[in-house]
Image (cartoon, rainbow, N blue to C red; front, side, top):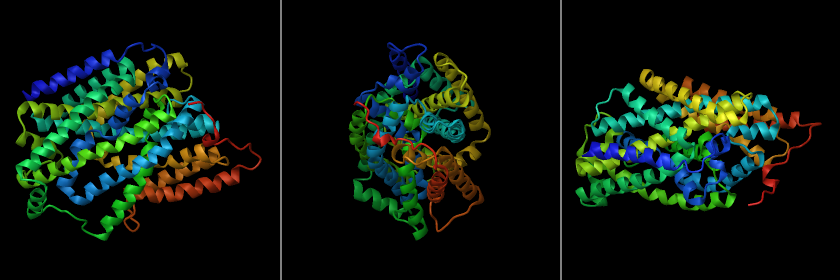
Amino acid sequence: MAVAIFIGVLIFSLILAVLSKGKSKKDNVADYLVGGRSFNGFILFFLAIGEVYSIGTIIGFPGGIYAKGASYGIWFLGYILLAYPVGYFLSPLIWRAGKHYNAMTAPDLFKSHFSSRPLELLVACTCLLFLIPWGQLQFEGLIVALNALGFDFPPLMAVVIAGAIAYIYVAISGVKAPAVISILKDILLFAAIIIVGWAAFSKLDGVNNLFSTAKEHGASVSFGSTEQVTFSITTIIFQAVAFYCFPFIINVLFTSKSEGTIKRAQRFMPLYMLMYPFLIATAYFALVALPNIDNPNHAFIATSIELLPSWVVGLVAAGAALSGLLVLAVISLVVGGIFTRNIVTSIPENKQRKWSQVVVVIYLLISMLLTVSLPSLMLNLINTAYFGFGQILPGILSIIFWKRATAIGVGAGILTGTVIALSFQFAGISIFSINTGLIALCFNFPVLIIVSLLTSKNKQLLTPIVSVDIEK
């Protein structure tokens, strides 16, 4: 029954993708990449939430607590909670910049504001470099979900199926299909998490007994050292401010029809935090009742199988799979847009949609190959993806707020921050247990400011986006 429900939900998602096509304009790249900047608050809310709460939430969060204890959960909760107020003030201004410059990708902002082809290429290459492991993470999560459900697919078959579904989503109607499907995904995801968590609470007779029993079984309920506290706090700060620099998050913001729409959607996003107590309950139940799980990432679905009827397990697994597929689809779309608009500039706008689809196929194939052949290496690069995307933050803030910023200054800051982050990461260097990305930002900002001040003399000052008046 679980398998039938799982397959049925995936087929229904494909039907929704076809229905989402509506009056899509065949050769209109804006319609394809950013939905014609027409999404209302309802659709934007679900699409944005779909990118925040991916398969890493339902698979990785309980798995992280199962393997590493409370410190993992505090970090995860902390950075998302802090990211919401940051996004409430920052994301409408990013949308304003996109509207002002008719930008459809993050590099478009830098190209148009600074009129610099080298800076556009630098930002585009940075985005593409760090999007590769992020896409691979979704494939890995999907494999985990399928294996835990009992599908004994070889990894190659699993990633081919997932890649094909993700491609179909974006090939039909671009970003509109993931936006519509995200509503189905969120309903399944939220319901599944609450049902499994409530079952875990009930099975062990309430909240107090669940946590006391987990503690008796050796579960960690506190930080183990001051170094862990320092790392968690600095990671929360860095990832919260870097979150809205992710290229696919920026693209989602561009789909909104107004700044007010973004603000309205942002106000309700913290409601999703209500599901985390249930995820934590799931993780601690697994520690008590399923102490010998081979792969910690199986904790959530293994608990579902232990506590729920087969048909409910199918819905749980379908929600997890859709979470990964939707993020993978949007990432693929962003990669296609960056390549056809910012890497290769000779493609006419009315041909960019077609060539974006070709690039999407190539990106998915590369991600599939790396998932199967180099899974450990690519998963180790996930942290560096956050480090890399975060180094774009000073440039975005310069576009929005600072008239004396120059292309050379922004580029120097990005290069400095990226080199420091990667060097520290791969050399295993730690400075007082502070998050490496935050250290890199502390070098990035002063380099940008100093170089910009030195190179802005005798140049016309730029108009910050915060000073631009755009009709709502």
